[in-house]
Image (cartoon, rainbow, N blue to C red; front, side):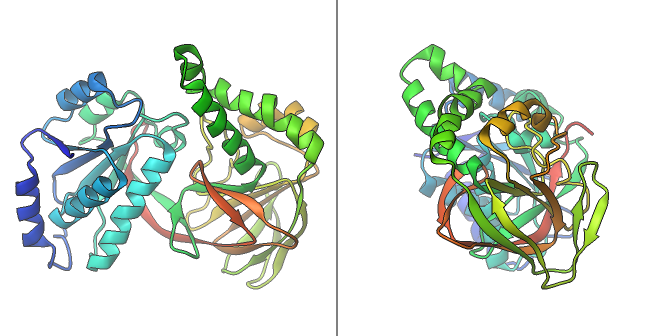
Length: 359
């Protein structure tokens, strides 16, 4: 079932889509219409939130979906109808999935202009929403029209997936534990709310993952090659230490974790990649090789982007290949578990325009 708010109906959306689907572009002046696409099943998108969204959305058309198939259908129709702004909200995985679908459809259609995106703070970690200065979802909807726009680079994987952040190693391992604990916590109201806060991540990391790290001591040897143009290594203050040529190996050694992104946060404003948005056209690759206890001792510094340790390597790249020399490593994309990999090819994709509420 699809739920449409305001004056939009499925029939009118499909009629407009048919009239525009064969147009190879939108007009140079972006269509003033706004589409809000939200998952009706999301825990933070209950009846009260939907009422407030309807009140704050103004002339925007609001679409609620209840399955991945419905979300794909609505997104396709929204793109074909030429909406100039697409608003999404929820967990970072949901946000990234919506952006991915919009961009894929635009590319399929050969559209020259992409819509502007806006992200509402309706998830748990809200890494992307926090980066874009999102506040209360209803207030942001009301000020959307006047919000300034900023460009946000995306990282593209070899299989076409796009994201603003991801990682291999410890972070993916901790996220898997967090998801398991959060699922168990859903049975009780208190624990359910606990795992919607930063405390839930700390419990998953310190209470469950660190003891496992101490026992299993997972560590991987990786080789990172610069497959693009610009590549530099930075010191802890962000000053350039080394410049690398195309094709040059920029790191060969052991890691416990490798995170990459064009936005600095992981969730709850955990500033794990403080140089991520420093240079347009690049992403921050942070390689960490430190013991679990050393990581715990430096957690506060890491959270505010001030981590210092001999086992820390910070790189800015436009394109890179990460090879796991022996075995494989867990991967997370946008805060969602994404299996295990033996090699990862990353490159900066064309930027998207996003509403920047804090500007």
